[in-house]
Image: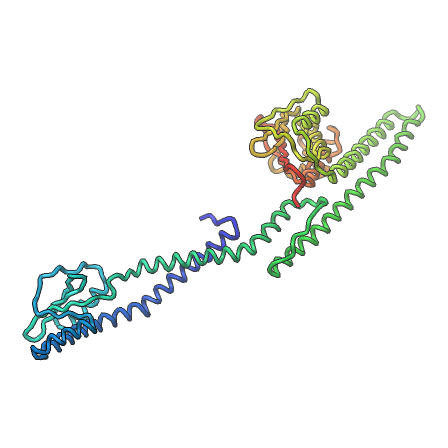
Length: 430
């Protein structure tokens, strides 16, 4: 049996089961220790009153019997009739009736059956030289223990549901906000502290998360600033080194010069990637006409590459355009460089999802999370000889994390790799 997903549903289930078990236990204990003994005593008292009334009636003089009969009717709801009638027997299945029959049979030393007429119970009582019929009204005629138990359980379940709902909502509300904040937090700026209110444990949790979020945000901001500063400052010595290489004498070995130039180019790519990431991570989103924007981005990467649009295209999307342009550019160039070509389509049916599919050998499922790590390369498809800084997919992942988007890799329909970026319109939730 699958457990409910929410805290409220789980609490209701646990409390409901507990309340049901408690109600059943209470009903059984009440029946065994209270209802059944009272029922047994009541049946015995009823049988004793009937037998005693019959004995008294027989012993009285005929002239006093009418007054006695009136007294029994007024005080005890008993009717004594010396005239016997052929009445229908009561239906079987009523435990209390059967208990009265058993008690009467014990007192009269004869089997007795109850009869029913005029909304009264009747019994033939042999006493002395008479066999009289005595009618009485049973107070247990309409008692339904099973229905009473069901009502108790249902009312208890309703009380438990309402009570647990009230209690859990006071806990679930702050916990839901905390869960949403944890899920959406990516370390970007603009984080709003969770309200530190409610029970002591929730206050401690919110305060701890707020402190952690501030520390992480400050750490990432400092990292980005440091990365941008170092990358920018490195451009000057690199330019000097390239200028120095250009001024080398002609008698220097050309292979040495080519090696220097290749290393300088690789360093410039690393610095450019770092700068692009630092700029994109702190970019604020704004509204753009998404179709025109994305087609311009793809055309700028490869004017022969076209986008296949599926589903209703949104008129406007709030997005960090520079960061998304770098994400699309890195994915397309990665597919063209390592996958033999790129195909782009956008699925707008349920959510805004950009797919970049290549025709390469694909990425094993066990490697799909690792390729987002900086400088990680697949042995069978990527090497230093293919070029690139090794930061392309890492930058894609970091930018998606910073802006609340998600990026995943899957197998394409033709065996290549399907890189999918799901865009959350607007700024990441904090």
